[in-house]
Figure (cartoon, rainbow, N blue to C red):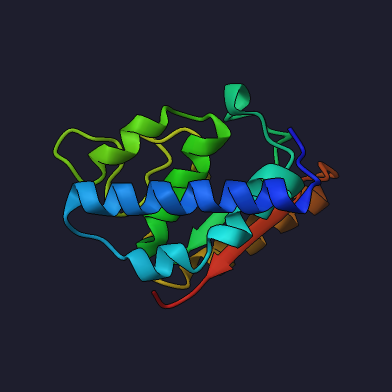
Length: 150
């Protein structure tokens, strides 16, 4: 699903923002500012640029996205939900006990998450390693990394 119309991409970015606000509100905690600041970037990546399919979330030939500002987990979760990796209603369970949507994304619990987050900035070296591996093995996947301090 590649969206090329700017107005449609703006709508997707707004849908991501709505999901962020609902998730943070439902959790009564989180980092809305850092999440809201990257909604446009995620809309373009997930709805225009990245070669991904929600039903094939572990396909080796898919593009990769590494979130290196883990506090923006609500933004990533909202982008993934709006792209169809899981139901948008799940966003309301952010940081709840027994929810897969915790404060930092976990690739073993959330479909579409390509790497766990932790220390801010560690994602750049991970993304670099994935990209180098793709190049060495002639796989041709694209790797995107989003960095920030919030």
